[in-house]
Image 1 (cartoon, rainbow, N blue to C red):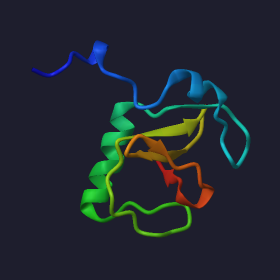
Image 2 (image 1 turned 30 degrees about the vertical axis):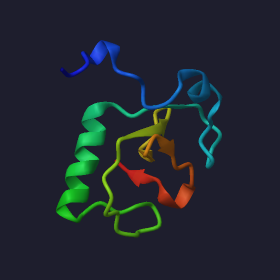
Image 3 (image 1 turned 45 degrees about the horizontal axis):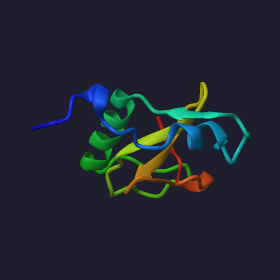
Image 4 (image 1 turned 90 degrees about the vertical axis):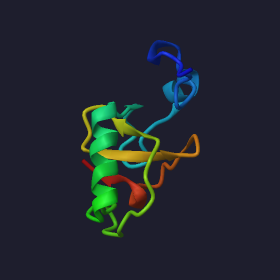
Length: 91
């Protein structure tokens, strides 16, 4: 039986999230909303998603972290956030 969304384990520990910062500008990071993650995954499936280094992205993401008010998302795959500036995804 599926777990209700209110009981689902977060993609990343909230204490860890509070300590993480954007490697580009040092802003605090927040979880990307599900609709943003879905939009990115649709673009990946369509073959149109590129990272900020203009490399084609071919692996879907579980979630993402974005700088507060930012227009990029750092992907989360396998429960591990990738905080590499060149691998951030434009949204």
